[in-house]
Each structure stands twice: as C-alpha cells, then as structure tokens.
Amino acid sequence: MKYRYIAGACALSLTAACAHAQSLVKVYGVADAGIVLERGGPNGSMDNISSGVASGSRLGFKGKEELGDGLNAFFVIENGFAMDTGKAGQGGLLFGRQALVGLSGAAGSISLGRQYAPYYKALRDIADPFCTGLAGNAQNLFSTLTRVDNSVDYQSPKWHDLQAEVLYGAGEVAGDTAKHRTIGASATYDAGPLTVVLAHHQQGDMAGTAHSRNTMLVGRYRYGDIVFHGAYSRNRDLLGNPSRDALVGVAVRVGPGRWLASLAAHRDDYGRDAQARQAAIGYEYNLSQRTDLYAAYGHIVNRDGAAFHVGNATDDGTGTTGINLGVRHVF
Image (tube, helix red, strand yellow):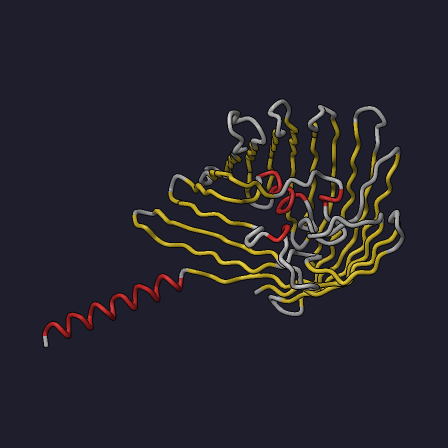
C-alpha cells in the first residue's frame, strides 16, 4: 500500500510539473486583412484584398523557463501567413518570421537562430510612427534590412538608461568566413520621454570582396498624447555608392484612436543623384484592446530615375500612391 501512495505522489508531482511547464508557453498572433488600392504603377492601377497591411499576419509560440539563480531559457518560433489566400509567408518558410532560442540573466541575453536585425528594430520601434506598416512604411524608402539567418545576438542589461545590442550572422560559406557575413549593432539611450538609438548594419556579398553598410540615428520623444519621431541614415551599397535617408513623423492619440503622419526622403549621392520623397497619413481606431480598424494614404514622388513604390507591412507595392482600409486583430 505504501508503494501505491508513493507512486501516486510521484505521478501527481510529474503532472504538476508538466502543467507548470505548459503554462510558460504562450500562443499568440495577428490576423490582419485589408483593401489596398495602388495607383501610379507602370502596369496600371491595382485593387487588392491583402494580408498583413498594418502588421504581418502571424501565428507564434514563445516560452520561458526559470533555470535558477536568475537564469532563464527562452524561445520564439513565429510563422507568417497570408489571410487572403492562406499561404505561408516569407517564401513558404515554416517559421519565417522568427525562430530563435536563448538564455537570459543578469548579464543580458544571448539568442541564436533567425532573428531581427538591430537596425530594423530601431527603425520599426523608434523611428517610424507607422511601425513599418501601412502605406506610410518607412521601408518604402529606407533600406529593407529585416531578419538575419544563422545569427547569434547579444543584448546587454540596461545600465544608467543605456543598453547595447550586437548581432553576428554567419555566412556559412566554406573557405571564407567573410562571405555573406552579417554584422549588426545598436546603442540605445532610453530615459523618460526620450529614446535615442544609433544602429549599424553591414552585409557582405557572396564573393567576400565587398559589403554594404547602413548607419542610422533615430529618436523618439513622448509629450503627453503626442509622440514625435525622427531618423537619419547614411548608406553605402555593395558597389560603394553612397545614399542617405531622412524621416520626421508624429503620432497623436485622440480618444480611442491614433493619428499617424510622416515625411520621408531618399537621395543618392552619386551619378544621377536620384531622389524620392514620401508623405503619408493614417488613422487607427481601437474597437477593443485587441481589435482595431485602420486607414492610410501614402504618396511617393520620384525624381531623376528613382523608382520607389508605396508598400505596406508585407507588400513592396507597385505604384507611387497607396490607400489602405482594413481590420487587425491581435491575440
């Protein structure tokens, strides 16, 4: 009889442990679909029912386990998909948005896998009032540096309002570690209403003989219900050609809604000196804490051979004018 009690206690203990482990795993996602009208494209106008207009539609799983002494293990796997067709996003990758595992503690966090570049996070989270979504997406003009495969990322703990992040993406080319290698870094000052980030991204080519470079300074300032945004970047492509980008924007909360607006500019500083300017305005109306309606308008003026398009969170776009109307649900 004693052995039965012991076996029963062990079974209850294991069940509780399993239940505890499951409680640390979170299922989350975004379901976003809208109407996208594109004008000014080389092949004429386009009217689309699109997915991921404000935010990329996704299904994700993330978890955390306490290992003791302040050390934690964590993971994130996130699948992107299209609400309009049901197809997988990011070229059909199973977890194309994110796939990473790591450890965190008093000394910071380190993670390995497919993850966001520090440069992109600075643009999305701090610089762009549209959060790289809708027709005002800053990446319509700024470099589209988003995720890095085969990468290891370290984020330091916050110290006197300062924090640093460093990312290394292995090129995984035999015989030369410089081929297709990615290096990214950012330094953040975040105190009260003011946040300033200096970010850098460097991407090597497949030959290992050249690399592109992007360096950006971004800022955000909160004043009550008004948030001001700004960014300035200097770029150099694989051929050594320089260019620069700039953005100013604002987000204003009014009741259950939020107005967004931005002006962005791009200029090539070589040869033809092509340039482009984008103006955008948008509105998000919260139906609840998890569901909102959105509308946005963006327009680009290209000059001297520039050929930029108005896209959104998941689509590069085809025209110089974009209009968005849709709904987003976060779960």
